[in-house]
Image: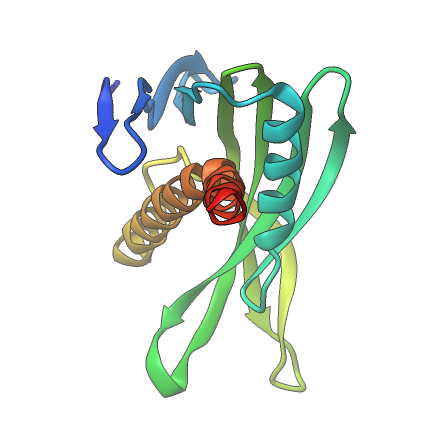
Length: 197
């Protein structure tokens, strides 16, 4: 089991301190005894209210909808400060002009907020197989494979590529989320300075 701990990163621009940990493979076990892949952390967000963080969390989740990724909010609880969603994105067996869909990776995401901090969690990654139908369209087969599985007989290199794509995509999303969670606060502060001037 691999655990990466990053702690106390100081962002110079806003003198904003973040303490967080990332756990690509958690200690929670699946039915087969394989460690689950999970990205989770608590982020300190000094001087930001629960309502402000909740609104930004909800807005960020909706930003995940674009041509290669679909996201839907499954729970929106402003009193409890929770936003849960389900997301999927396409992975490919070929790139460039001849890009060919290999399947989709579905996962759950959650953001829970309190005054001055929030917690995110990306978990339950499952690969959904696609195949070409008789009209040359790529369609889902109904077969699935948890991303935690280490073996993919016949296409091990492609399976490793899908895992790598997922890892990079989630890290990009985490970085974008951290920016979006505090972004409007900075804009509001800049506008306030302009008005007072």
